[in-house]
Amino acid sequence: MANEYEVLNPWAEADPIPTRGISPRISDMNGKKIGLFRNSKVAARPMLEIVAEKIKERYPTVTFTNFVLLPNYSVAETSEQAKYEEWLKGVDAVIFSHGD
Image 1 (cartoon, rainbow, N blue to C red):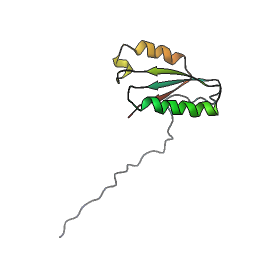
Image 2: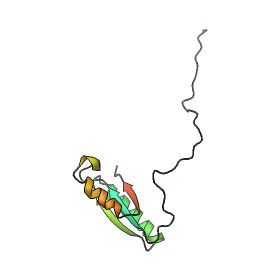
Image 3: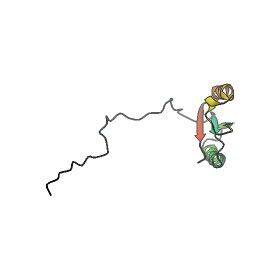
Image 4: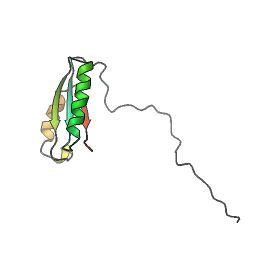
């Protein structure tokens, strides 16, 4: 058996660029209004409720506002886009829950 095989590593070499969010992070959540965005999946609501409880325990002055997208489509695919964009203007940060 004179066959030779080259074995390649599936991990690519990449530049060590630190990851960052797509939007600047808020430095303190005290007194902030947090948007809770969820889709219509069954688990989305209870997950956000628990997250909101935990945040409220740590930051008692935080407030929440909800945006629910029914059915489970992209906002851009629905008539809700203008309402969603207006909702975004009134929040300091958004937490998204996808219920799968």
